[in-house]
Image (cartoon, rainbow, N blue to C red; front, side, top):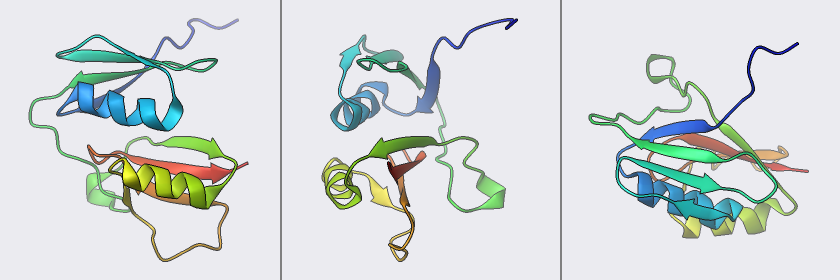
Amino acid sequence: MALAKLGVVVLDCPDPSALAGFYAEVLGGTVEGEGEWVDLKVPGGQSLAFQAAAGFTAPEWPAPDRSQQFHLDLTVDDLDAAEAGVLALGAKPLDAGDRSRSWRVYADPAGHPFCLCAC
């Protein structure tokens, strides 16, 4: 028997509203709240939350001295179309040279790594 159930995944960032807006465009859903804490309610999926963090330092990928600590894997039907979409929203490619894999790595506007994964 489980001792708990997952409530929400929280990402520290400098601007919770902006980062919630980025992920709302990527995943769909509704942004709720403002200020220090913002929620993204994703239809049929796990909610995400975004928390203001003073002195936030973005992780680097790959860099053992500035570990990514976690990342999101986002499943997509068309890697090229999804890539064009996230880049237009402000994501930055972290593995621009390798297109042979079924996944690609990006940083969101606050610097958190995430992957687009072909289903």
